[in-house]
Length: 424
Image (cartoon, rainbow, N blue to C red; front, side, top):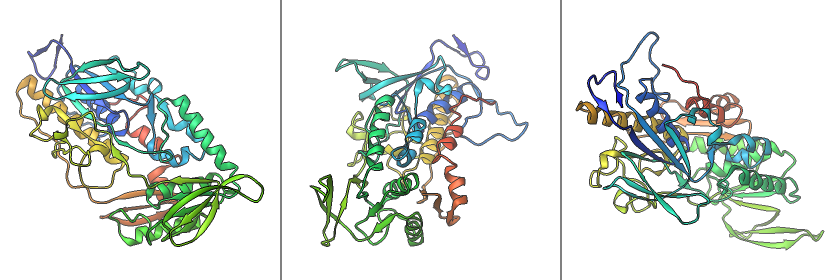
């Protein structure tokens, strides 16, 4: 039994059960911020209290279950470097059992897939990784959908275990190192730009060519032209060859003049070139939401959240179901910073819901506002950033501020305090 020091006289027989589907930026943020709040602590991704300030927060017992298809936290925005550097690849994936912040008796991480969610019954059907087709049920009081997008290779590794991921990344990197005719990356969006720049930075001897079908990079993003033009300048400064207005027609496997296999790359404008690797960075990502009811989703599979991050009000128990991160239908460019911010909001709002359930106090929800287009883009040793209030900036100082020395791994790790440090 648990008695909250704030809700005096209220005894809670069982902990509140929280199910978080997805263990990336949003899911970990939601789980850890909620644990902070339910322990009476300041939420790690929320505003920092002023010196000497103490905010009384009601404490509640919670049992948090995180389900993820991978066996560890993968630093997604580090993918361009993880697929260019074996030493960085080692750092970029940390098994959940090796993350100190998750080593708590009330946090459980399951390696597997949530197949379906029954919002009416508050029951999820789950299949353990390596357990065949046998299913089990997970009952919950509150659910957070943070399952992200399905991205194709080589945008992200497809392995679900760290050991296999290291083989996958290593094979890719070693193949690029021996590419006599170079590597062609197709697609001038953020992923393609960063893939090309990181590969050239780590392997400066390698011929790296980025090709894009439009006359501006980042053509699908609602960003000012000066951001797109500066991104092109930085790519060329990084010695990446860039072919604009080149739409890929087809690739054919051939043998070069020395009898080695390679590809002839054909473009619709008639231009051709040789390459040893052709990496597609243009495939459209798909929300990983097939486990949810169609009623909660738009026609592309994104969750139609309310400003409180709760599910649509016409779905069962909508106030107890939240969605965050890349799976939500909301304004703004998909970013890990936004996902962690939403995780904090969801944690706060679940804490408020619990408080109402225990004491009857009306909840004070945090609500998302419209998110304007903003971006931080790593291009070799420099970066370009943009948000409406500050405009565009670029340079090595921007790289340091936005990404540190490891494409943002340490920044994200410290922001969520995955190293286990807790403060009041």
